[in-house]
Length: 167
Image (tube, rainbow, N blue to C red; front, side, top):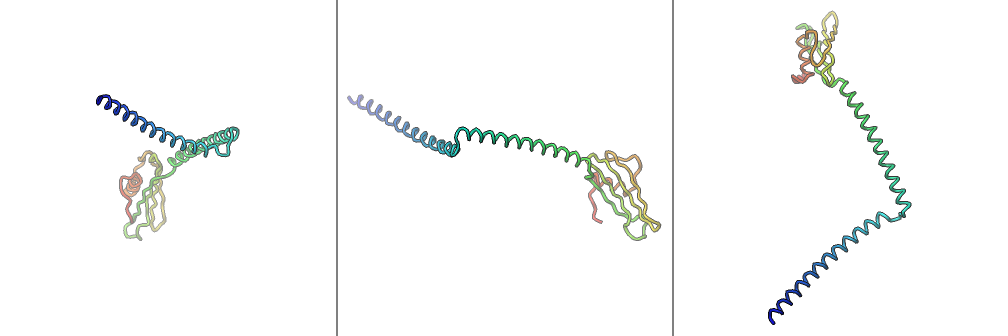
């Protein structure tokens, strides 16, 4: 008889445990349902089936407009990137005294290069008789004509081989 009582006690407590777990799951599911219903109600508030369809059509139009603007912006970015690569981005400047003892560092050499290290070097030599300008083409960081010392320094500065010096 004791064995039957223990079996009934175990079966009863198992049933009670299963019932408690079922109750907890039901309460949790009900809470999730209420939350989902509130979100649905908020979404549908003031809308019927026709309004909802118009709403989605309007959203689709907005998305299409945004995609078109995105495409235009990407095209503009490509053009700007192309223009930036073609513009002068690198420079080097060396000021010097071409003829020692004649009034300071009035002469200069300046190098202007684009993204591909193509551009020119200008050398301005200042003397008592006047100012003389010389220009030499630079292609991929090199020149066909020989550069003077100051012109080489300006080109090296523009190429980043030497740091810019405050004068």
